[in-house]
Image 1 (cartoon, rainbow, N blue to C red):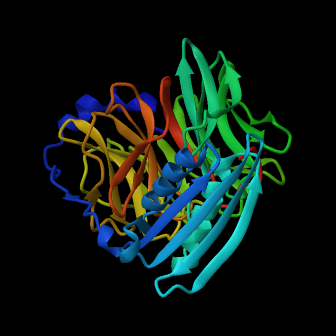
Image 2 (cartoon, rainbow, N blue to C red; image 1 turned 180 degrees about the vertical axis):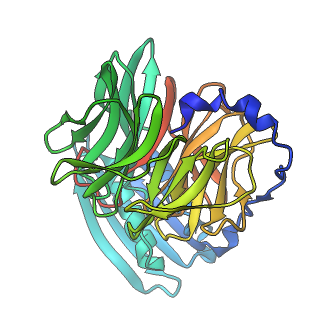
Length: 401
């Protein structure tokens, strides 16, 4: 991430007046959603559970709640049990009264049961994966204490997995769900660590110099990261199996914030090789990099979409930092945030229909989720300053739901 450079570069960016400050806004397309109706009764948590189910449906970007007579399907749900032992019974009927799904879910939290059903409901009617059961990890800071927190897409308190008086930053969730890579300054300079959900512990894997902004290959084998030694920053790659390091760039410019394509064969990164930070695409083994667009005088924090067709990134526009989405070839640039002055570090949901990012739009930097179909924004974190989000895969191997 370019955080430490962002404000130092502000004056330089203002000097470039040849870049366009007008971009196409994302257009909501909610009429493409599948209308469904739901009802939920049962124990004392039923009212909250219904609210959560309606949120999961509407935030999916695929289904939307509607009146029963207008719905493609109707879900009749009954929640029973008590804290630590819940059962959710579900009957889903089609518009003609045909039974589409009859199932019972059981677990320790009603929120998890609602998420599981919502995702199955999405898949049942669309054939696409839902994101209700996924989680988002991020860094929080309060009174000089840094935390790596993991939060479900509901009102439950986040699970704090790491707390430290020294800086921790730039977490990245592995595609297999087993680890989160992050940078810690507890030994002076920034070292790269892996937090294991299976072992509930973190271990240092890279030290020497400043090592930050990890990014995983889709197979979870390699981690690209930015290593700074003697004031120069380049992209390196760590092999988690062999625990070896390979240098991928060797320039006098700053190279940082790598993100792999879904095939793992290419990466997009930020470089100031032309005098200001721009996005470049290069082979994942290194080599020549091609510039990915010319629309901005300052852009950073690229994130390659799971489908491989789009790039999300942060750029300066009219004096503020906002989130943009463009095609991989740099065309069809769309500005997807307009509030606040500092919107940064976008990351895709594992299904590609949502973005997580940090923003100061409500006065304190917090984590927000953006559903791209309707442009619905949901504030995930609250209270403490929060930033540097990373989204779990659809299938979570570690942690507590």
